[in-house]
Every structure is written in structure tokens, then in C-alpha cells.
Amino acid sequence: MSDTILGIDPGSRKTGYGFVRREGNRIHHLDNGVLQLSARAPLAERLLELHTGLMALIGRHHPTIAALENVYFARNPQSALKLGHARGVALLAAISGGLKVFEYSPAEIKRTVTTTGRAEKGQVQRMVQILLGLPEIAQEDASDALAAAICYCHRTPPERDTSR
Amino acid sequence: MSDTILGIDPGSRKTGYGFVRREGNRIHHLDNGVLQLSARAPLAERLLELHTGLMALIGRHHPTIAALENVYFARNPQSALKLGHARGVALLAAISGGLKVFEYSPAEIKRTVTTTGRAEKGQVQRMVQILLGLPEIAQEDASDALAAAICYCHRTPPERDTSR
Image (cartoon, rainbow over all chains, first blue to last red; front, top):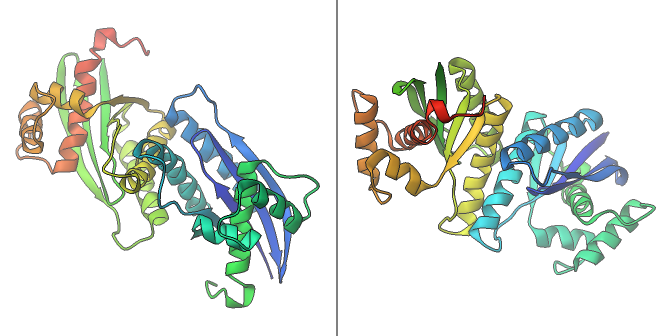
């Protein structure tokens, strides 16, 4: 039995994504990257780009699970609002594509990947590279997305997944 | 020449909407209401309900313009984040439906409808009722959505609309 998991790290300027396939206890890397949204386009158009981009990726890899960081704080209301726009559209794409959505705290994701909830960004990137055997370190947002996908694999072992 | 304008007042629990048609200098009320999202459903599912609901309304009334309040502050990052999710999905629905999006500050909308930027909620509801000749006062979120649509009509007179 195998599952394809889409990790998403949403943002209103760029959104990281990462696909992994879980087969038994093994995790294989499939794809990762960053959707760069047109910096000069109005927000609504960037959201359409984001939605279209995610739907295309979902169509290509046919994931059944989406994994995202949940957010309980932000620097300020204005940045929370912007992040919320992108996050809402990412969740919509996932659920429209028939994916089951799982959310994890930033500390939970870091702990799964690096064994500490307070890891630095660079440590997460390096551990994601090692765990997935990537030839090089993934871009920061893509790496965060892959970390969320890895977190799902560790938190929901195949035999304990009662969702099917 | 006539335009149909969709006003939206997005929220993650309920989203107000209002449709008006502008013919020359006259504004006619077409429809208004509140999309109540399933209180117990996970956020991602509520966002799908919201998107589906707005797309159905757009399909029914064929608006060409969307008008929304822009938000520059919120009580706290957490409520800004939630609002952002709904607002992002509302913007996506508008732009996917081919609508041109216009945003106005809360004070700008209140000033257009009541002549003061500091009007109370009840005043806005009452003035929206009078301006559109509604048989009764619209629900608060629907009334705010109609107020945004009215704001568009006043701010972009037909002869000055250079978008076509």
C-alpha cells in the first residue's frame, strides 16, 4: 500500500511544495519546488496563480494527503492576514482535489525531522536532504513543505491510519 | 449600459453577499444573503463550502465587478489569519469567475453610504435599506456586502469607468 503526500508551505509571494511517496515504512522523494507568484500582480491574481499551480501539481502526482504547518501566531495582524489568504487558497486546492488535510505545529514538524522543536532553518533543510536522500539541499520553502510531508509519515504510521 | 456588482463581506463562519445592478445613475437591488458555513466542519471544508456557494451565486447573477472591504487591522493575528483564509477564497472565487475586484476601506464604504466614516453598524444597515428600497433591513453581513457594492457604484461612475 502506498500513499502520496503533498506538503505545502503557503505564502502570498511564494509557496513551497513537496511530494513524497510512502511505501510501508519507507519514504521516497517525488518532487519539490517553489511556486513564485508574480510580485507585481494584485493579490487576487496571485491567489489564482497559486490555486492553478497547486491544482496542476495535484493533477500530476495524485496525492491523497496534504500536510501543512498550522499557524498560531504571526508577527502582526497584517502579515497574518496575508498569510491567511494564501493558506486559505492552499487548503481549498487540497480539499477540492479530494485530499485529506493534516496540520502540525511548527515545533512538531521540527521535532520529527531534527529531534528538537527548536531547530534552526538550516538544520531542517539539511535533515530533509538526508532523510530523503536529495542530491542537494532544497530551497527553504520547499524544504519546509517536505518536512510537513515527512511529519505526516511519522505521525500517522500506515497501520494506524484508520481514515480508510 | 448596465453592470452587475457583487459585494462580499467574507468571514470564516459566515460570509455576506449582495448583488446590485447599476443602470446609468440608478442602482437596483438584485439579491442579498448570508452563506452560513457548517460550524462543526474543519476549516478546509468550510472554505470549500464558501467557494462553492460564491461560484453558484456568480453563476446565477453573472456579475462583472466584485467589491470588498479591505482590511488593514484586526483584533489580533489569530483572527486576522482566520479572516484571511475566507477572504483569500472569496477573492479567488471572484477572479476565477472573471470579475474585476475593487477594494475599499471600511471608512470609505461607511462615508459613501451614511456620509460619515464613523457610522454605527445599525446606521449602515438602515441606509442600505433606504438607498436600495429594501422592504426590510438586511442581515448585518449581507448589508455590509451591499454597502461595498454601493460604494463601487459611487466611486466609479459609469462615464469614468475606463476599464472596458
